[in-house]
Structures are given as C-alpha cells and as structure tokens.
Length: 442
Image 1: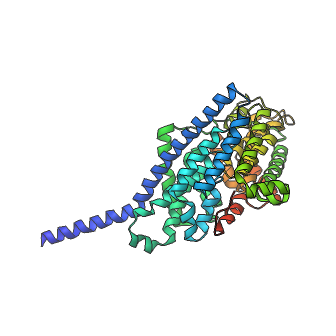
Image 2: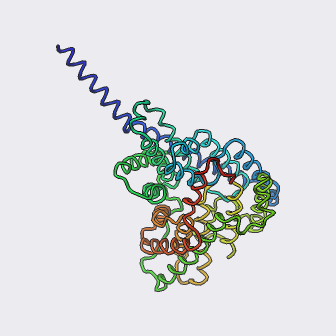
Image 3: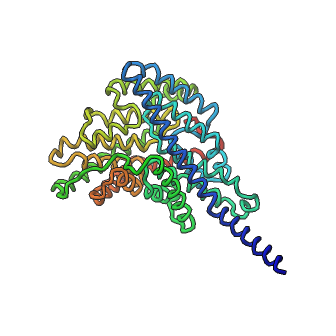
C-alpha cells in the first residue's frame, strides 16, 4: 500500500515537472538561445563592418566595385535560396503573428534564420546602410517559433495557434531587448508594434523571455548603454519647446517621405527602372549598390554602415560631417532597402535623426548638442516606425536620457503624427505584402 502511494506521488511529481517544463522551460531555453545568438550576431556584424572599413580606408574607391557586386550577390541569394529573409524582418514577424498559420510556417523557418544572418553579414561587408536590430527580431522570432517542436503533438493541438504566436512574439521581443540592451523597449515594442494590444497571459511570457535573453547578453557584453550616457545640465533653455516642435516636424516630414518612397515605388521610379527591377532584380540590385557606393564615397565614407559610429561621435561632439549628412544617409538607406537584401532600419534611422539634431545646432547654438541629437534620434525613429512610445523608450534606454523624458516623448508624438500624413505605418503596410500566396521580390 505504501509503495502504491509513493508511486502515485512520484507520478504526480513527474507530471507537474513536465507541465512546468512545457509552460516555462521551453520559453526559458529559447530566450537563452536568443540572447546567445543576438550577441554572436552583433559581433559578426561588427567584424564585417570592421573588415569593410579596413579596405575602404586604404582604397576609398574600392566600394565602387565591391558594393554593387555584394548587392547583386545578396539579391540573387535571397531570391534563389532565402525568400522571406529580405528587409528588416519586422514586417514578416507582423504577418506571421496576424496572418494564417501557414504564413508563419513560411516566414519563420530555420532556413530563413540562417539566410538572414548570413546575407546581412555579406551586405555589411559591402558597406550597406543597414542595422542589425530588425534582423535580430526576425531571428529571435524564428528561433522561438521553431521550438514548438519540443512540445508533444497533443499539447500543440490543445494550445492551437496561440502557442506558436506566443513563442514568436516572445522571441521577437527578446531579440530587440538583447540587440539594444533595452528590456523595457522589448516589452513596449511587442505591445505597440507587433500585437497592437495587451494580453495579460502573453505579458508574463514576454517579460520572462526578455529577462533571460537580457541576462545572457549582459553576462557576455557587460552592462552598457548603446550610445553611452549623455550629460544634460539641470537648467533647460527657454527655446526647448520651440526646438521640440521644430525637430518633431522636420524629422516627421523626413521620416514620412522615407516611408512614402518605400511604399510607393511605382509612383516615383521611372518606368525603365521599374521594368529593370521587375525583370532583372539582380542587375537592379547592382545599380542600387553603385548608388550606395557613390553616395558613400562622396560623403567621405560617413554614410556606409549602420551609422552607429557617426551617431555616437555626434553625441560626443567629435563628428566631422556636413549638413547634408541626413539627406545623404537617407538616400543610401533607400538604396540599401529597395533591392531586397536583408538589413534593418533602426540604427540608420537613429543616425539620420542624430544628423538632423546636429544640423539644428546651427540654429539653436545656445542649446546643448547632445540634447538636440537625442531629440532628433527619437523624432526620426518615431517617424519611420510610427510607434512613438517604442521610439521614446528605446532612445531613453540607449542614452540613459531620463532628464529629457518629457521632451523626448513630445518629439516622438509630433514626429509620428506628421509622418502619418505622408504614409501609413511602414512595417504594418509592408507586412500586407506577405498575405499574398507568393513572397514579393523585394
């Protein structure tokens, strides 16, 4: 009798442990894996850009040859082997979360995960104006989504699509958190941009995944702020309100135009170029690569890459760039995105915003330069994403800029509203292209 009771208790304990593993263990395992991959991916991209800078500094003209070749290779490989890996990856995640289950099965595969990492690394070797944050979100979502295979078939049947959705959402949020070392931004991004709603059941999963991914990233990279800590004096200038409105409007217009250009290529591209893009996308990619190279060489190399170094130097007052930097960087950013090579928009958007703030220091010379740059960064990022709360939280966590909370929030809201005059939310609009039976060519 005692043995029967013991066996019964042991069985109940095993069942309880198994249930805890299914409810939490897989998510924790996935979050740790996302953190590891995010750190490894960040180092891979840094290595690739360092290699680009090495040959570009010795032979400034060489990108005129290498960047078009790299662009053509990326477009060919994406179309041939990794359809669905193009662009930042955030539209794919949105489509997977809100579309039928078969869309997630096509856009969140291990093959696309590998292609995203590999081809964005190749693109940064060519000096493309791309960031790693969007791809990290896509990679995190794909990795966690594929952990559904760790669940028994019966459990997956009971949970339905909700399980796969929670896995992908948690992976995406953990990816952003690990990429920027910004855990709050991961939560806000998932709610504001990816789901457009708040669910109490999902929130615990998100926070758990973000914590585990963040702990892994911190243990490997240390506690850091993405752009360092800005120094802002306690006394704010009288013209701060004017600067907030002006930067919000300027960055909103610039970001809105950028979104309009990406979403309305048929309205501004000449017919021969549209035909080339549709019929010979690899050649079109090479042409875009040449444009990126010409702009980069003309700017003295400042428009190549994500723009992280330029933005950080501007914050520290050590940058030597022209007033045309925001326009040149935007042109390079459009040229990098149109061919369809993998790469994100977050970091280049922050660099463009920093450039806007740097230019306006000529007008508001009595204001602190880091303050204007921070306002420009949040304004342009909010204009491109049209997710003002996410942009605000990201910038706050990246620069430790809590002294500017109200000013940053106001700038983000103004820029987002102005941008919407020109175009709908970019990621959401791009995600609708994946509702078609076949993937788009760009």
